[in-house]
Every structure is written in C-alpha cells, then in structure tokens.
Image (tube, rainbow, N blue to C red; front, side, top):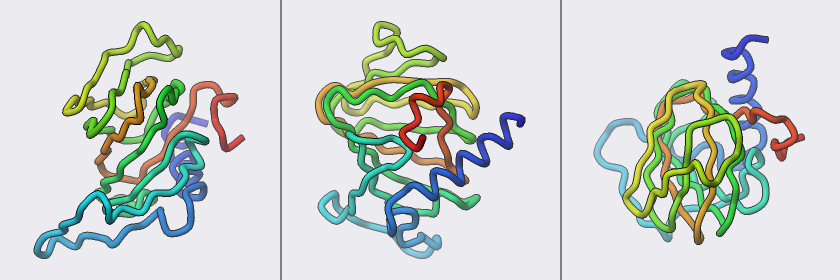
Length: 159
C-alpha cells in the first residue's frame, strides 16, 4: 500500500475513532463571523491518541476535504509518538509547553521547546514526535481529510 492510500485509510480511521459529536462542529459557511470562548468548547477523548489527550473541534469535519480547526489538550508528560499526517499540520501553543521535533525515532533530547505562542508547520508525510510539559493546549488548523499514522503500529492506541 502506498503512503497516500495509507494516509487516506488513517484519515478514515481517525474519523471513526473520535467521540460521537466531536467529529463535526457547527460548520463555518463563510458568512459573518464565528465567535466563541474557551468555556464553550466541548472536549472529548481522541481515540487515535489514547489516554492523556482530549480534542475540541472548533470548525469543520476532519473526514472531509475542507478547512478545520481543533484544539488538543495534553496531560503533563504526554508523549506524541513518531507519526505522519496526510496534509500540512499547523500548530500554535496556547498554554503549557510543547516539545516537538522532526524525526522517526522518539528522542526527547532532540525536541525544540515551544512555549505559549510557539508554532510549528509540518509538511504532509514528514515524521514528527514530541511531548507536553505541564498541561498543554495546542490549536491545529489545516485542510482535511485529516488523519494520523504512527510509524510503529505498537504506538497506535487504536490497535
């Protein structure tokens, strides 16, 4: 199976492992403004990331070819094992600290410390990993369909 087919499959698996109702928020149609506050977000588990990670969809449907915005809340010490995505990933750190790196092997010493306001942009298919220092909230946005494929299937909590 080639990488594109694998990532498309991973996108669909991600869509199937999110909690009911979390896959699609009220879609923004480009009319007027979409405004909200953090206390209005609905958090739920992320089946593709396991214990210690929660997701809140702000806009979009991760399974469609359309823009999306979501937040991830990561517990202190949460490890993001080496993985790839099928599309560009754009991340902004909103609270806590994200330690993040490009690479195929989890190596905490190789990460860059991204404090509040820090950001990262990763290309489709580029391997990455990281961990959270303190409870950390990051916001991701891009264009779907979205998915995650772990380089080592033993790291995938969906297994």
